[in-house]
Length: 351
Image (cartoon, rainbow, N blue to C red; front, side):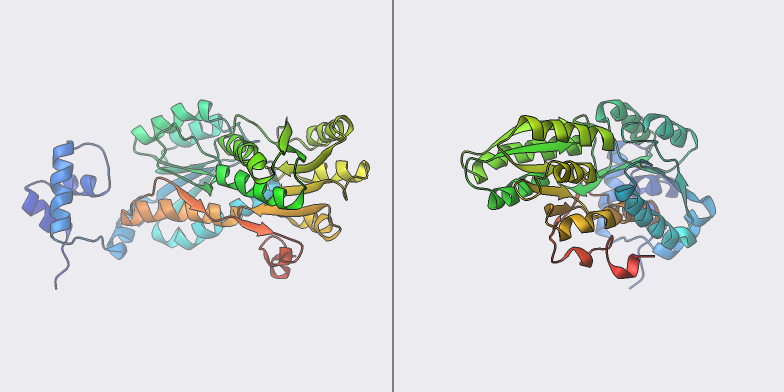
């Protein structure tokens, strides 16, 4: 059976080939009624894009995908960057270029995103540390037909095309259930987070706080420490927490910045009494698992997050694939027994 093409659709719809292309790939410049008409005919003739022809066409145009993720918190974002860059390398022969403009730290993306938009990119991957600041820029990008995918943390009130992450509220509830299994009823727990302006940190915190008293009858979250991803601030605030709350039995660190908390627990000689649940995994955490300071960690797979975000945009720009509104990854639980099975600590990735 002969493959239906855009020429056939254009003829049946009595419109130009350019109009068909705009309708099929969600581009502006046509009326909604025309778009619906073209899409209806495309379905009727069982149209599917030809990836090879699409690649040749866009290869000449050189599609550019901008990436803005933080330079800080390298334990996490180095892995995400590797996922993005590896996927970009695989797509390089298809006419896609990566434009990398990192932010100095989470929440400082505005300047770099502005520069990416001025440079004429076709899509952007970003970690919006401050959604209120980033939402107008994201909306402007989408209005100009620049697809935006948020990764790890979201800007849910914006018009972004998608978000790739572990559901943060679910992640917080998962940590709460784990903590409840480690502690007796009526226990006190605390949370160490990064910035409550970040959607990810806020929802993880709320997920834990709402679930912990249900999973641990009589249990309560007695403190939430906002440490702004600063190692010094995390360490000092944890030391103050340990000094002030003698009945504390559990700490949940919902960012990757867990080492200062481990160090504070060791300084106060509380590693046996206080159960620590962390987030993600990197090599420097291994000794703390081995000695029992870290009981478990909620793994978010930053490499896969970055890889998925880039592939999602590449498939959309090259093949017209639909971008899902959100793409949640399934979190894993890291324990001492399985920690060497993860990418960040496996022997084959060391060197």
